[in-house]
Amino acid sequence: MGDTLSSHDSDSTKELALNTVSGRVSGLAGALWLVAIAVGAIGFYVALGSAPQRAWQAVWINFLFWTALAEAGVIFGAILVAAKGHWGKPFRRIAEATGGFLPISFLVFIAMYWGAAYIFPWMQPIEGHINREWLTHDGVFLRNGILLLLLYGLSFYFLRVSLRPDARLAAQRQGGWRKRHLERVARGWRGDEEEAERSRRTMSWLGPVLILAWVLVFSLLSFDMSMSLMPGFISVIWGPLYFVSGWLCLLALLAVIAQRYRGRYHLDDVWGKHEFHDLGKLMFAFVIFWSYLWFSQFLPIWYGNLGRETIFFEQRINHGFKPLLYLQMALVFAAPFALLLWRVPKMNSRYLSFVGLIILIGFWLEKYMAVVPSTWHGEGIPLGWIEAAITAGFLGLFGLSYSVYASLGPKIPIAEALVSGERSRGP
Image (tube, rainbow, N blue to C red):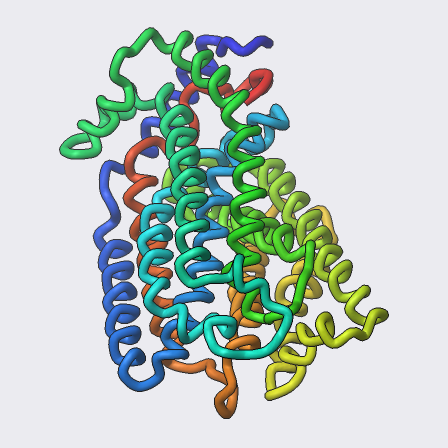
């Protein structure tokens, strides 16, 4: 079967996909996201007066976590294009909806400029191996701001190209600003088959470009925004650890969201046990890969035993952080590894979504351990209501932006053979 859908496949896919066009954010979900945002805003405001460093630490942690997760959703579609993947097509729309958080990510990044003095140790008159020509307050934010603008611009162009083949039909099920937006996306329509083919051609070159930009920009972002918190410490693996963690979190989130939407929209034929099995296998593979990268960083630090290297573990073993380091590795490696070993459980969507939640919690803790031990010099471990409230606020921002973007179009692609017969060749 070629790239052109049979009439049966096309009709079945269109009917299923169009039934998933919600056209609104659920009232209960919207209320929960708004309450969470309010809790985060109030918590941040109160903490600025009583514990400003903890407030900005929490912002730093959540910016790194949610930004990596949001961009990885767009990259999911780009990787499917570059790899000519078939199994992931049903998950592409719900993955790409994470891109709705990217504008918020950029606004938070700008706001962090005013909290940098509480986070960056190299802004203080300290000794150490610091490249003060590279690490400057204005330089870090200007450099990374420009790079993020370019990356996010490419990401939104990719999302637009990806959505366009479905925009005309989806607009017929929408109203208000959603309908107007989809009509703008579908302006100059050339026909269903031509638009689908044009979208594939554009994504075939845009996808690899976006992947390369993601790797380069997020590596530099991680160097400046988290590795620099340990003056003198240098790790060439720090960048891959960051963007691969976002990718793994995205796979975990897909398991959670697909489980929720599967029952709500009756998508058992689209997200069946084999699709969840494929997703589970990929989660398992990247749990091992991320842990391999982490161990590749640990091993030379251990046998080198040099002060500039061992500072990483000294900060995370002393001052009461040691149990959190062990808990981090249990949540991001030991538990997912054990739970994803077997074939049959990976076919159970509820089981896989449970493992996904463990991974997401584990990597939030991993971002906490990347930031706080390097910046906190007070008594005790700063993990309490401040961090919980601000994290709730970011969860609300991410959830609301995701829900709004996901409400624009169908939860599965229309212009693909997903329901019956063979998959079409190429994404």
